[in-house]
Length: 376
Image (cartoon, rainbow, N blue to C red; front, side, top):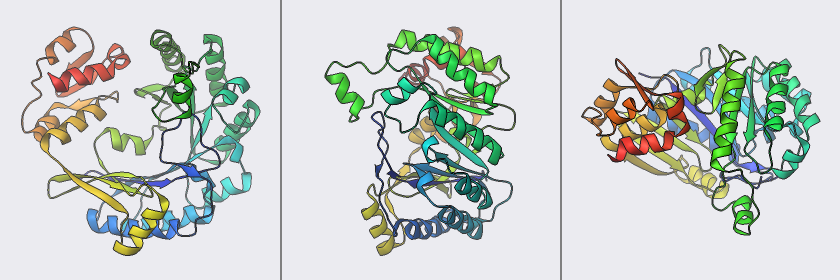
């Protein structure tokens, strides 16, 4: 059986970014949330049975608002419930929350990977993006993360209105000069319900157009691949040994625990796969755990069509692609889309024996590729 990933959603933020559409809430003291998360983990152990853990990932929100004691309590609980052996334990942090003693305490609590929300080193860009740090703080935080943790990743946003190729190249150069072993790059997209979406409705441009964004993506890929990075997923680049084990669990279609307000999970038992979501607000989540032992709000059975479609959608994001035999086992039939041959002949997909994967050109239009495969 495949390994199990564990996701912890800590929903609080000191400040909500104008482009963010995650389930987040302004920072507050919440003594009830951690005990609820620990209790929910016990419920998940009952669901999963004994499984080997591949990763624990603290996301949010801003999980770096958690204390090292809180992080350690989660790690200790996971170890007691499932056992742990050579796993990735990662936490997302913001540069302005950098604190050498706290980060060393995180490391002592078991954290071995820091995911740092750098976004840019350009002060004007950071102000535009509503970040609480400047370029100097970003550099210092990155250096500290690389010093303390065995592995570190930096997030980079590109495609903000007014950005030049030179500014993008500068951000990449700083990351490379620092020795960053994993870089996640995200094109700025305008999500409904965000402050940026409202600004665009008022005629205030916040993101560059699709054509220029594609050019920027080429700059990112060209720079990092020629610098020894493996472009192992559409948005992610890693040096050897530094791929995100947690995110790979998602992309490979493995099961994952989802605890904390608004967390998503996947669990397979007796050959049936379920999608879970927890209650969105911290108050409703903690109340549900108190009353029922779990914060799960919805648990939906994925039929063969939904399960195989999810495997294809996630799996084509990674360089390794999907196994056609596994797709057939999940779907109950081979992938016989009328679009498959045209997409291969058009150079957007590559079929190598049992593997189907997106070409570099196909990755640029992956949403269109997967839509054609699934709707044809």
